Length: 180
Image 1 (cartoon, rainbow, N blue to C red):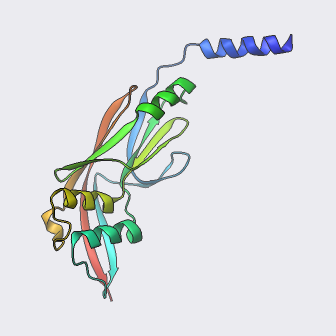
Image 2: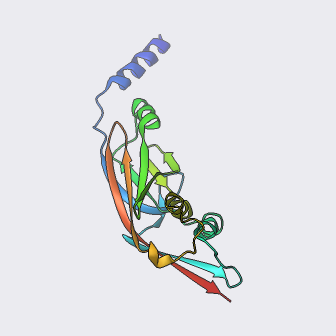
Image 3: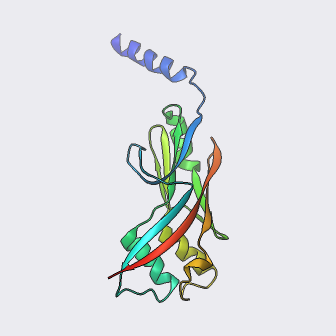
């Protein structure tokens, strides 16, 4: 008898009308926790300061992008917050259909890092990868890195799923400083 009441309770709760899923906030973020909390908010205009040992020189865009990816690790991204926890069905839909992309200085790519939480989704991309992919598309990866040739540039993130879509943007600049 207790088991039947338990099953009926589960069925009743599963069929209750839920409040429609809505995005409550989308924030630019350089680092978010496993709970969806943004620990490093990004402004609408961000300048990445790269400090490099004086002896290190970047002979081309690939070497600069690799340094940024492996050593300095700038990760522009965003967190989408929702008005409630995802249902089981919504979570499955998101796992199957959620995608995010970036547009940067005339190039586009798919965002690498994505995490779906209870009531949030976080996405990020390494700035080093963004630069390397852009320069590879243009066959400029092995050319000398003239920072002012692509910076500052708009960085636009687009996100979509069967449940929602949208975008958020920032302006990105890069400053490489050599330390003695």
